[in-house]
Image (cartoon, rainbow, N blue to C red; front, side):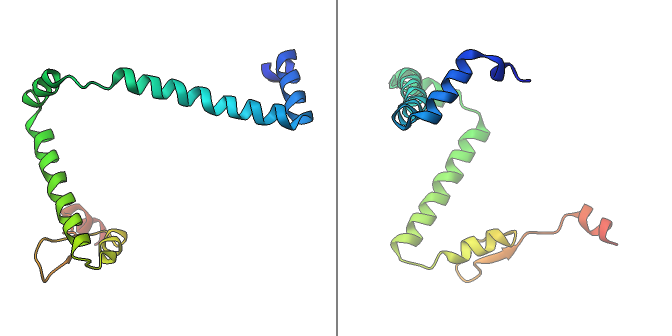
Length: 124
């Protein structure tokens, strides 16, 4: 048997939550609130608003992370622009489900991913 099942404290907790609905609600709330409060506290302590530290981290960032930041900003700007122009963006999701990617050419929105050399050799 499990160690929990043999513990008198565990059996008392199970019996109390089974027999008393207010105790069950209080226990469930406690199990949700305490981790939430601890998580919020950790986020507040680790969140830095130090401008000097942010500047230093931005200067020491790798080219890859800077490039990814730029790409993400461009993608977000493109997507928000489409939303502002009220364009139909459902084809973006359809393309993603088909394993395709959208191009930046205005009249050719969907383009299939190029086949890799390993895939063609394995199919033959």
